[in-house]
Image (cartoon, rainbow, N blue to C red; front, side, top):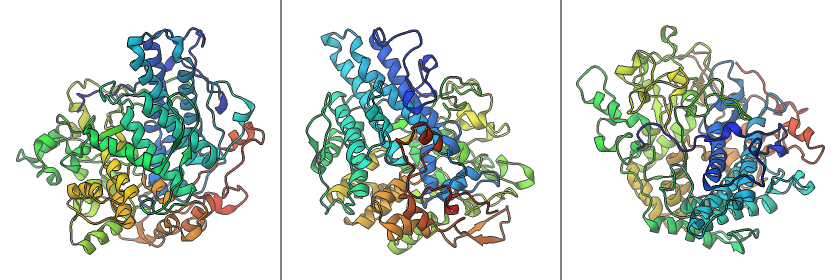
Length: 629
């Protein structure tokens, strides 16, 4: 684990970048410097790349209900409800696939185009630096990272909004102002960016904490190709189906085509390299397994978190090789102690350097009006209580365990069972859609010594002095948010090839019997392994295929939430059945294909060159938020 703080993805020079409000005019060039003179040395290019990476900090921190798309995708899936308090309407609108305002989903739209523009700037100006032959590898690595980040931001953008303008230059041509087909134009380009990145970058994981490398690019080639093949080409089962090859765009590091066999070869290269491995204990990935909490469980005092008591101490989150920077982690958003209530610049996100998803998933405890009373929620602490895990994920998981005659470690390693783990937990009087479960993976954690001040356990980590935000509960969260783990590489390989040996490794760690390949087995393993990591919703979509209606995998899974009993308005003993606020989950999914509404402000700005997605006609009341509680 990195010894405290906690990120090389800091915006080393983001404060000197400016941009306009127009999403197609987010030019990140340095003030008073020109493209002809900057960058002038390798360190300048590193700064440009750091600013490109920093968009992830802005999305992963700050106000999660406004911009954290990974939180959004969990809430939009069958893993989570909207929940929270009566006033937390944005998260409820996401869960019901409706909108409160015509530009509700604008923030990530602007952020992602800003990141794309920053990457374009690096790609165009990198050779302003007089690179020597000895610096060629460094130049290629930095260029590969810029291609990778452009591809990544484009992937997220089109998964959110579908057909949008494709921006591949800082000079916007009339053609770039038109929205284009995601299936036929955007995916070939973003896959080409990933291929360029693969061929330009090296395999060194030590180039810089949190930076992409060749293996990261190969893993994301697979994720993007599988979504394109499943969602757009409707290849329901990749191991037996026939996914077409993609004709790639000619650019540095890229030419030719990309086939399913190429994707498989890239994943096998990652496995064969030995550069990554599954951690021995699944719990080692999550901050609640830190050694300070483990020591409390063994010191004979009042508090004991029994769930981690059987772990090996050397496998605790904050021990060498565990937690942040562990060898299972291919790519992630990193955080550091640099939050502020007054971060300036184009993307003012206040708490952007703190993993604020921990706050959104934190507990809302109402006992004696003591929100987050440490004695009632040990070792977890307070938060906003949004995105509550659904009854569905717990029930479906339990059914799978019962049918298979096993206990899956990951269930209780991923979810807090409030009634059995936190028996004194009560709800706030305005709580909505409470299932009886909470997210454990990214839960806020504190300790006996820190709990009196509602400090997080990070305040006791080596190197900590004080909170940059002046508020530990909101500012001191530095657990990496995983974007790609080695477990995903293994499960993608099984899904693409039908070879169960890779899936069996993931099952074995969880204590699940090794099973032969079936698509259903892969679907279950992906749901259990990656719950609350922002992956489930787009998996559901690619297993459904575009325009597959209310009978699709996703539509049926979402509709299965209907009628589940939830606690509303804090009345634990008075549960009520959950229903969709305007129509049904299946009809809303079928109408939208899982895409969000494009922000009307940007549609207006484009003067008819960008159109609204199907299923988002503002005059249709089924698209509009309705107060339920």
